[in-house]
Amino acid sequence: MNNKIDRKFWTKKKVFITGHTGFKGSWLSIFLTYLGAEVTGYSLRPLTNPSLYNLAKIDKLIKKSIIADIRDYKKLHTEIKKSNASIIFHLAAQPLVRMSYIHPKDTFDINFTGTLNILQIIKKVKKIATGIIITTDKVYDIKRNKIFKETDSLGGLDPYSSSKVCMEYLFNSYNESFFQKKKQMIATVRAGNVIGGGDYSVDRLIPDIYRSAQKNKNILLRNPKSIRPWQHVLEPLSGYLLLAQKIHNRKFKKITQNWNFGPNISSCKSVLYLSKYLSKYLKLKIVISKKNSKKIFKPETSVLRLSNYKSRNLLKWHPKWSINKSLDKIIEWNEKVKKNRYASVCIDQIKDYINDK
Figure 1: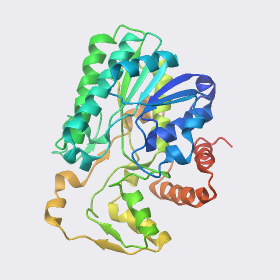
Figure 2 (figure 1 turned 45 degrees about the vertical axis):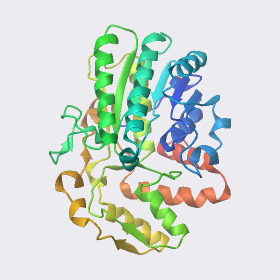
Figure 3 (figure 1 turned 90 degrees about the horizontal axis):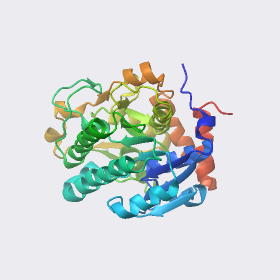
């Protein structure tokens, strides 16, 4: 059973990516370009400095890079029409939970209005056959501690999660109202906690660990017992590509188009596990923060796991890399890019992942 990404399908396929300057968007841009697709990207400038987008020179790698706001409907509509894209991947978002508390209105505005714009444009532009809307694993109602499947109740308490739940309901409304009898197909995808080389985001575990290493500081953990569905960035991206192929070719017409792409349960490890694994390599000490510890370890929020049964069963997609191998790949990435080969190191790992030697 293999993740069968079809190079022939993607060769010269015109693809539009929103959020191409972000971590996942940069990896997806490199992946699609490697497969031979003609990629147009639309996004704000990278949120971080450094960023994979700048280091890998994504703007020179893809066909066209547009720096603009997803909330600018007129600009977005014009650029999508110009691109002649038949497939859209919508990744543009305010992606951080902590930032959503600081800027709740912007979080809702970007995540909801941006998605509304994309869905309305897909509806209007008949050239677009397929739309993949990226939401999050945090759309589920976490009152129950369980392994979440696509049919479970949705719910979000923090502004980030809530905005993503709004995206899911918006998607469902458009899908049921406008796309059931059309030749266009859309889907939402919910991935686990994505890790990989080139992530420089704030408030994320592995980038924070590497920043600690650069400063020769201890690794400070606030939530060591929290368990998350960690997965290498290539895992969900391969799922998105496979799903796009299938629904573009009119497969799964009568199936509910919400899809989990999560790791096997064996890869759902604690924050402490990942920290210890990397600390040995980086020769750092781990310090557990006792600040607000009683508030942090709420049982209903400490564990998050996704069922990947639907994707395994229907798409024949499955996780390829264990959590340990994923961490090894991050170590490898950071070692090799010291020679300033950012895009080529990503491509080497893509080749390894899809067994394309």
